[in-house]
Length: 404
Image 1 (tube, rainbow, N blue to C red):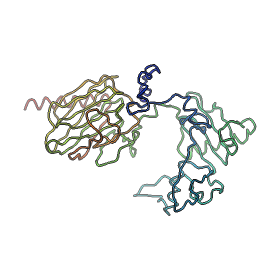
Image 2: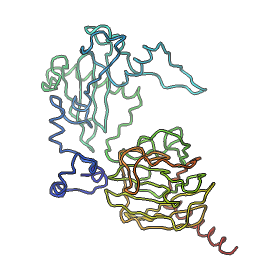
Image 3: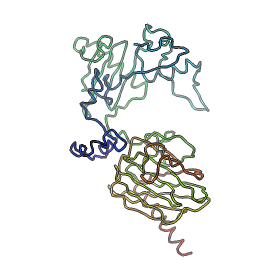
Image 4: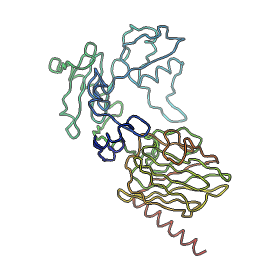
């Protein structure tokens, strides 16, 4: 029923899912189907989307351009890869990408334009080589041939068994020619290592779920200081590029200016099946933590001021449980115990100033956009020691205010 349960190591049995069979495929589920159906869906290709066999990397591309493409419904059979989309658009627009932009050297464009294939269905493919890698699974396409290996985590990469296929006559990779063409295979494997080094693939990493986590480094979506600042209006964020709140302690502060009665969502991440949302409703601040349909909600004991204020949530993880405290202009405004803290909340990312998709909370209808002015929203991720220091500082601040 809930795909994210798997990534939180919560195993849902078929019997448990069948009890809600009518919900499967509807808005009250984030379901995933069994591996057998994935095999059927990949027919006639082998394996799954996490692999580098054709079942994991072979997809259709549909192009619609009546002014240029004259054979509507026509087919093209040239080999191309997703990294060819950008150079195709650049060529069609007559754009030459700069090597330096605003003083920063740019990564080179690695793909090959597909524009020639729009006009000539029978043209030979202009793409001669392409590497693949996913969690240690590897593959190399070269001039119609494909070398590929399905990796088992923990097995030395040099011990992987490589296969060889002639995709010109064997699209579904059923006739392994590794034994018949050992020299070709060896050359292609060596070329894979060359391509991998040239494109920053090395060192190889065969972890799986661990790779879903954020990697903190400057000049990336996840800065080294783990501080995020958002200025609305802004588009919804992909989950991978947003503040990584799952399984962590964090502080969220929204700087707002609102007239009386103005409410709406300040920050929402996930869906009605799992996620969290911070919003103003009936002049009070509300936090709703939605763990697979189980909602833990706290509403502020203080009203949100009219005019400018700083309002937010201090979330503290303690093992598998946690605490959420509401804060309004530095003052405590209520708290709630979180019975289960999700390590990975959702594959659906957040939105700032509204809840853009499937609504996280049952207390409003999406998008429930904030009606005041949300000047900015700050999120800081905290290590356990940083959380203790922040809480100690907050306690001292409260004590000082009480003495005044």
